[in-house]
Amino acid sequence: MKATFTLLPGDGIGTEVIAEARKLLAAIATRFNHDFTLKEALIGGAAIDASGDPLPPETIALCERADAVLLGAVGGPKWSDPNAPVRPEQGLLKLRATLGVYANLRPVAPHPVAAKHAPIKAELLQGVDLLFVRELTGGAYFGEKGRERDGQVAFDVSRYSVAEVERVTRRAAQLARGRRSKITHVDKANVLETSRLWRSVVTRVLGEEFPDIEFEHVLVDAMTMYLLHRPASFDVILTENLFGDILTDEASVLAGSMGLLPSASIGDGKAGLYEPIHGSAPDIAGKGIANPYATLLSVALALRHSLGLEDEARVVEAAVSQALDAGVLTHDLTAEGAVSTSQAGDYVAAKVRDAG
Ligand code: IPM
Ligand code: MN
Image (cartoon, rainbow, N blue to C red):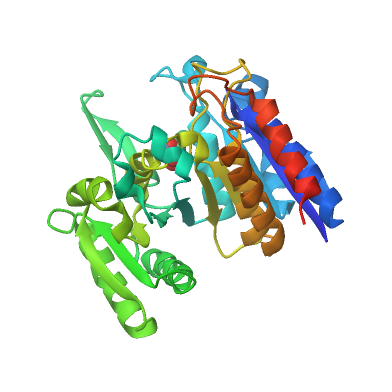
């Protein structure tokens, strides 16, 4: 198969983990005889430094033409002055909106090695297999923002339309059908009007179009507790943009490290956007010690969701799992004998090359 990937290393450890994604894509191409073209472009702080624009037009063009976009991370102390006119994160948000990737999939299925690192009792992690479906292009992230009264008052409007809720609900339901057919919709319907809209749309869409799916509504404050008390009782977790951002960081604790969690952002268009859920980690950037597995698992999601290459995706997931089993662990997962970012990436690429 011929496919084009646009790689956006971004800032901090983003460049280090994307270098490992390159190795992995080369290994997959060799092993399965695919013809992958890799392009690279600037985003975030790196793009601000080069041109003043966190998402330059050349980057947009390369992303729109790609089959899949792989992003490292954006942001860092250099660009986080609250009064700065532009911020790296604006580049990422604009990219999500431009590509129309309204459904952000964040699977959380802790590997046994995680049990040792998660501050959660091992027995509670048994059988945990979650798929968060976070709405990604609406809500407070994209509503009107501003200041009033000489800067003394600030606001971020959270707005959702019925159509926005319908499309992400349908996506979640289709995904749930391939799993355990259960959806937990998370909101704050006792307080927020947007949540009341979500609740009624989710109830109608699932009730009318997906009668085979079991569903429940849970308030977000309660959900933060349930996620730690009984994570194995959930399957697909559907929620709006800001709640999804917060809950998925919380869920990463179940996996033992942020460095293990990938994400896929998809819409109705061609290119999907794939990125680890972790950030640019300025504290460890440039040291060659970042965990590349979340990015490599994001490559697997790109193969699955944008290219339809399920076998290849599984080979990548198996290779990462073997690396964890074999104790090929970066510093976030082990105190002793940690491997470097590139050693971890080399191990996975070699396993993929030898697979099957
Ligand atoms: C994430 C990140 C982003 C978000 C930031 C970098 C804008 O935290 O992907 O979860 O809030 O969506
Ligand atoms: Mn986040």
